[in-house]
Amino acid sequence: WLAHVSLQPTNPENDSSIVKIEHEVVARGIAFANGISLSSSGKILAVSSSSLAEVLLYARDVSGATPNALTFSSRIPLPFAPDNLAFSRPQQIPNEGREDALIVAGHPHFPSLGSVAQGIPDSVAPSWVLSLTPCLPSVSSDASKASEYDMDAPVSASRKAPRVQGHEAKT
Image (cartoon, rainbow, N blue to C red; front, side):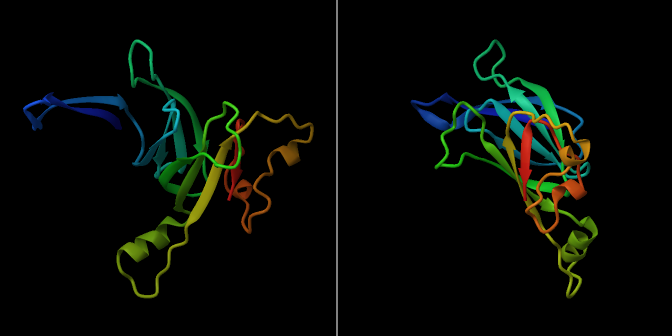
């Protein structure tokens, strides 16, 4: 689940150590919610679900009647169990009204990660980092080509997870 927590000083002029705490669960049912990131516009919230190998995207109300309210937008299947998330806007490319790219890092072989966590000698755990950039959905007449993406990577994400319309994925 996701919760929104607000901390506000009750009397900032005299004692800012006394705060009012507000807590509200804003999204439920996220299997192993393990990472979270907010886009620079504040309009998109991404949450990783490590158990289901996907990222969930939520639209965030930034100025409406219910500030910070989340509405589920989409899910993006991944070729690994995602862990860490970060939105990133490339400095050299004009934004042109588009949202930031989402950088997702995770573990393609969870048993190996468990071996490392247990301290088993000589164990190693691979990692995978993927950039998900918002784009216009492409139309392709060749269904086999439409399913291939991320072809410059040593192991293409398209071998492990389906393409998601509206996002370009690159390892």
